Image (cartoon, rainbow, N blue to C red; front, side, top):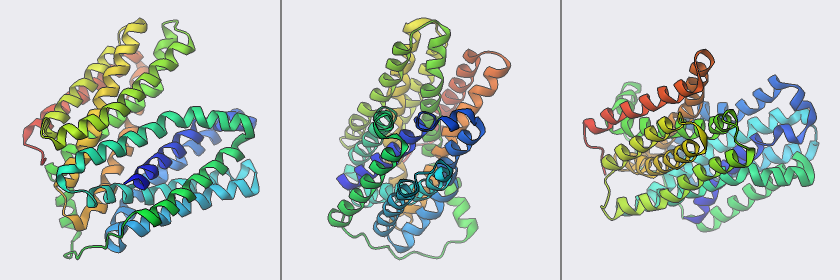
Length: 376
């Protein structure tokens, strides 16, 4: 399992490590806000388009080849920038990394599900989510150190070596999981399966959790600065949010496996905590900032492993890659939609109203999750 966890760390570290340090790595990018925005969008844009495609491919040819191929492609895309050392090639390297991550990320999720029996999937997805959260947390900090020491070239070189090493590790340690025979599926059948509540409810919860996490990371520092708090305090709040999200996930997975928690009750509790955290962000001062960080982190940490475990439980093994790819698409849409919703409302009224709107959407999802039991 550890090579799969390392693959999750790689995609998270690659996404945030570069995104947080593009401006610091090249002065021209700071002066060209539009180009910087395009570079930031390329990685996620590739994932939105390609994750369902590569998830389906993993079902057809096997998840292990797609995992290895994606990691090798990620290393190759990073090597492009290391070789040319020209900021004009950043768009190609970033687009290549996003396309490669679109392959190995859903393949890794599918292998986590296929290689673990149902009674152990909660713990497995909790550990996988923990490693991804560590990548998201360490990416900006460690990436900043690398850029300071050797510029963007050194950061891309480290990502190249990391992806190549994980690809080799996976080739040696991850067992082959052959594709299973599949009955022919029509487009209408695919739509019916993805529109079923057993898929929609966990994905909606995952999208809400990702939206809240993205909003917390992006806007809580802005709220802190508006209240006169120093950068150290706002940075500590974001670190606290990420730490809570990381630490809760293994516990939630173990609680699911030992039947101390069900996916239905866990998703409801996670959505409630997340909604309360977004509402707490409206409170002024350091108290509101810290309470919001803890509750959003705990809520998203609770939702993530339980949502993926629920999807794995309700999906035929031969369609696991397709389901995980579609679920990752839902998370990416939440990652983009949450900040857009909050920012659009904040631009017309205040940031507090933006938090409140996302909190309301999150809490209303509880009604959908409680509608019918989610498969364990």
